[in-house]
Amino acid sequence: MRIILLGAPGSGKGTQAKRLMKDREIPQISTGDMLRAAVASGTEFGQKAKAIMDAGQLVSDDIMIGIIRERIAEPDAENGFILDGFPRTSQQASDLEALLAELDKPLDAAVLLDVDFSVLMKRLTGRRTCSLTGKLLNVYFSPQEELDAVTEAGGELIQREDDNEDTISSRLDVYREQTEPVIEFYRERDALKTVQAEGSVDEVYERLLAALD
Image 1 (cartoon, rainbow, N blue to C red):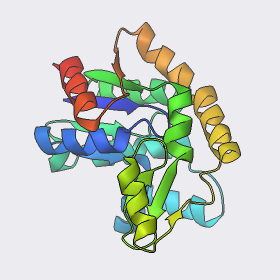
Image 2 (cartoon, rainbow, N blue to C red):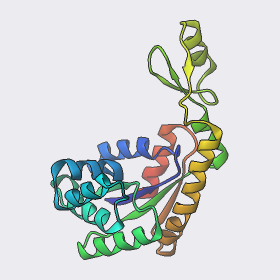
Image 3 (cartoon, helix red, strand yellow):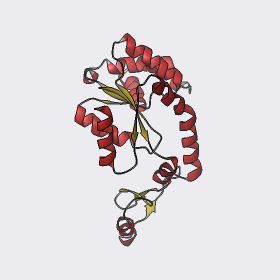
């Protein structure tokens, strides 16, 4: 199974990818992780990426495609992969399509985890961390007794500085601007599967499996 996971920040891509990775025994290939691993291992494209990043510049699409080529050639990706965080633009999607055609490893699907933006705002701006245990909670979605238990135990519910409404709105605007053309790219190729990603983790996972099967 070779799939791309698409979805806005807060849509649950990471959570669902980890479950799918375990069940299907295929790797989740995250752009950031892949880039760091390539640099650390000193691969051909990793060395090129390091030189660019050391100069304070952005890694180009052709180097990212080279790093993806190296990564999916590794033994753990023989039976497939879950690509997360790439492609982010239509050009990257086109370059990836050409690479996978060359390798005779076409995508099975691009899966969009679809969540209403008003729900995403609550998921992201409502995130809190218990100062005592480090447990992640949400002021909108966690049971009230769990929230009360933190303060009753003498702890605090801490909000990350960048989880404010202005920052989250900007992140979602960037996602909408960059990724919506990618969604359309795969829709035009009849390769897009949309999964309604509101509800519990288990409910969303069941919908994801149904879409893939």
